[in-house]
Image 1: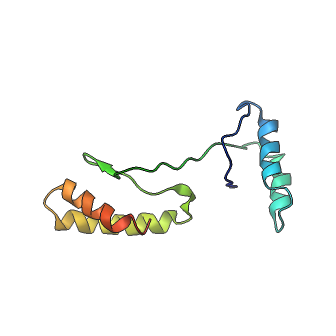
Image 2: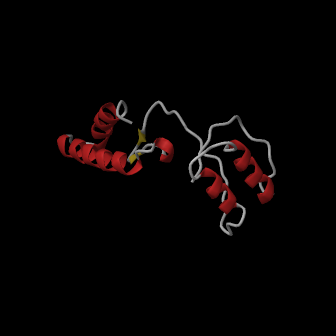
Length: 112
């Protein structure tokens, strides 16, 4: 998986060759295994290219739904395990989910 920051891209979503070129341009000149991976991309039958966006919310929960952190954080599994542990502890400590979600967010937001 390649991730890179950019302003909104103006490209044809159906043009796979153009999307491959966009990605190759974004990583041109990089070392290590990047040239090999980019070369392999040209032959990949399952190439996928999409936008990953970050959303900043005032609250992480509404009703009985609570959200987790970004896939691009590089902490996916660890953050999920810590978050589940903290959420379980807060649900056990509080009588209602509203208070538990608020406490969960207060503890997790700085970490996430």
